[in-house]
Image 1 (cartoon, helix red, strand yellow):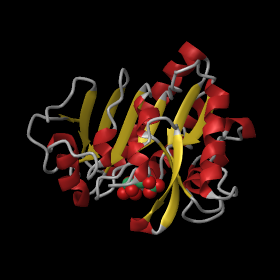
Image 2: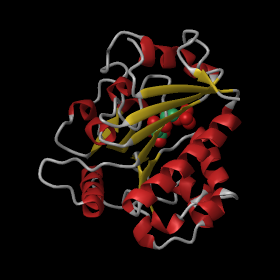
Image 3: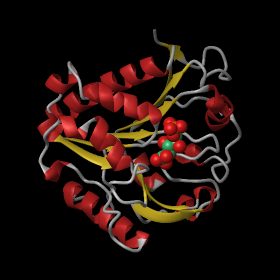
Image 4: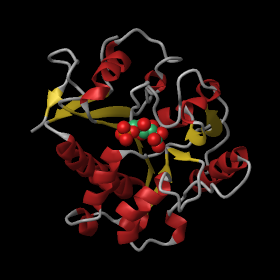
Length: 258
Ligand code: 6PG
């Protein structure tokens, strides 16, 4: 598989510099979206690299520079646990970033995991997305930025290998019981993610090197490697990796950023 023109591969020396570059891109996308459309709608992800990025955004210069009052926070996926649970992606972002921003509740669109069953939480979250974007008939909401990670098994958001969620074309959000982690997950579907203006993958660590290579340059096999489903159009994607995660990529396939 060749690298498509709207996909940029960027390699930084380490996980810290991935977070720094990610924070810079987040702030740049926010400024551009707010200037053009008056608001920035972003979907956050869970994981260790985003946590560092959120902590950077909670400090200057970003704390001061970003027009936070016009930022709307969503999540690309969520674990079906209470918002107070240490596994909650919302809780991680709340501690690392949101608690520093003093935003009105209307800016924070978390998955209401208190609702039961998980399918009801997914439906409510889909309604929450539609309420902000108000798409016309047949239109799919267009997030300004979707943050994603990559699992060693090729999953992204909570689109896991061989799961039902991979085949969902009419919904924006679904709930799926993921055997692999014995947990219900609520996830944006590939069709919603692919409508975004920009998708930013944050991938760090040598244990991801093989799957990074397989997803980006291996044979197409989205059942096994769901991250291959993510090909925004007409938007763009950026894969921000540390040297370890990019360790098996062909020379010349990426830009190295100090
Ligand atoms: C989650 C996300 C998942 C995550 C990857 C990578 O766990 O909430 O579903 O897609 O982004 O598993 O996580 P790390 O970056 O922590 O390895």
